[in-house]
Image (cartoon, rainbow, N blue to C red; front, side, top):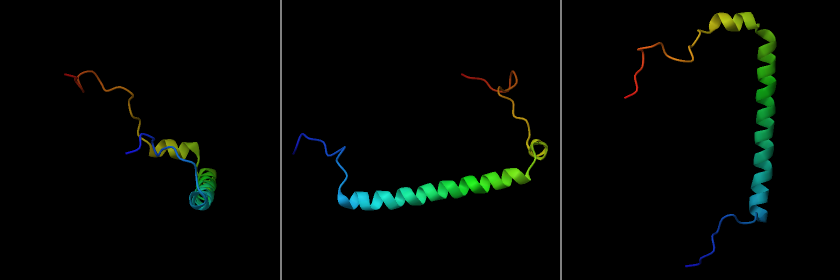
Amino acid sequence: MSSKSSFPRPLGDIECGIVRPVNTVIGDSLGDAGALLAARLERVSLDAISRQTKPTPLHPQHGAHHHG
């Protein structure tokens, strides 16, 4: 058994051939998601968002939660 670790190892031609297209697809998907979010935010006002949300307290009320 070799004492050398197999990680990290340099990327070979096969890995580079896979990594580049995957990075391209992920980058395109993130760009598409950002564009969809921006378009959605243009149609929704902050007032409409605030009416749909319920306030969530940062800390539970005294007695609502006990550690122990």
